[in-house]
Image 1 (cartoon, each protein chain N blue to C red):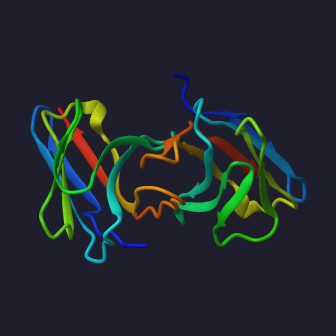
Image 2: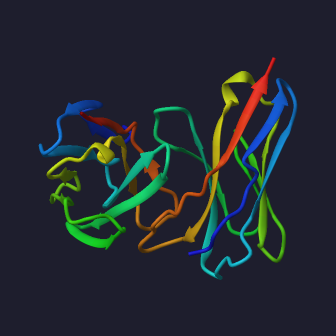
Length: 112
Length: 111
């Protein structure tokens, strides 16, 4: 089975712009979660989608949003980018019947 | 969500066995213990998961005592490529699963 894929892998944006990141889960997985990783805050949970519905959300401002499509692919959007949004954004998928989450390679976002 | 405590860093040499212990005193009845490995600028990679006693796969073993308040990840005969950050997490086995990552253990394997 192919693993979790994320596009693009690298992205450079300027402050005030918006960005959309994409995640394709492992085939058959219906749960997709997003995480932000920075040197200062470590890995932090953003939100999780299951069958096109957001099941839970972390403590991030409303500028961070996401959605999931019927084929379980997910997108994450960040509007009005700030310098502090520079991070590695990770997507993880999971077969909801078993425990472990499988992570993608991440998208490295740099905001200048 | 149970909080985990693990050593910030560990050093080892190639060929040695490495044991990383994680403390999770407030683990819930339906929580599983999962370990991930992460290399710089990559996503965490699932290593092993267990509920109680001992679990072994092709890369590691996980030892969980009866009270489940701690767990030990055992990496047999480490190599230089095992240099990475290792995270211990506890989370429910099914349903919504928000993973709470701590600081992890930075393992450095030297020749």
